[in-house]
Amino acid sequence: MPTPPDPLDPLLDRWAEPSEAAPNLAPEVWRRISLVERGGLEAGGLWSDIDAWLSRPPFAILFVACCALLGLFLAEVRVNRLQREHGAQLERSYLQLIDPLLKADPEAKLP
Image (cartoon, rainbow, N blue to C red; front, top):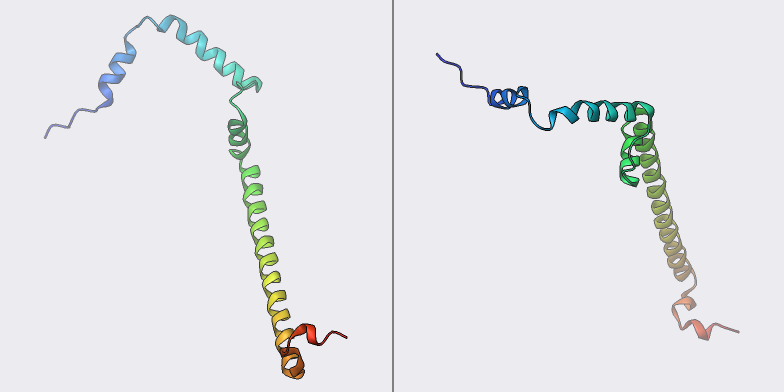
């Protein structure tokens, strides 16, 4: 049973052949390697800087932890606000239950 041809074989054969770009290829590769090793990455903008920071596991874990804590804090603030509103509503209903005059016009009660 014959094995099917590997689709990478023609690409590897073409790569092994010398081309016009080959003389400049090796110095360019070594220049890029030395540039990265020195830490002088080419300026790619803000997003590439953020990507570089978050590609390191400690900073990625710190970012995820900060996002989780911020989410918990915002949820707590929202629940606290809802409980305050509910408490104020209970207080108003209690006062109206105790003092029936509160159901009347509020301006009529003013002295």
